[in-house]
Length: 75
Image (cartoon, rainbow, N blue to C red; front, side, top):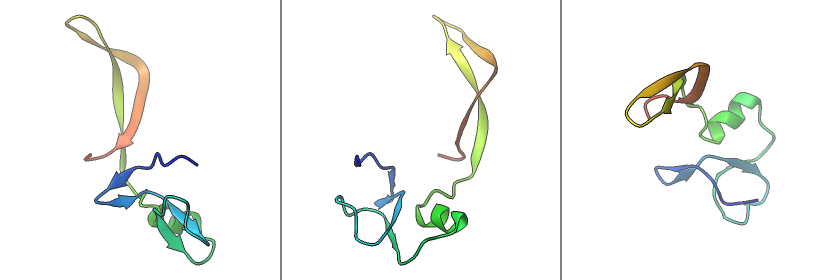
């Protein structure tokens, strides 16, 4: 497993059960979680928004029809 984790405020966005992973990051849970509990423990309970995608030319940005990115809100 790569240590390519999202870190915010010194906290990794992941959780684990049992022994800690080799990098020692994440939130330890003592038992399997529901999907909602897993999302919260992994610090992935972000609000998301849909934003249009643009192709950028020399001086103009052109919106791509029916193409969107889903990104965290307020980040």
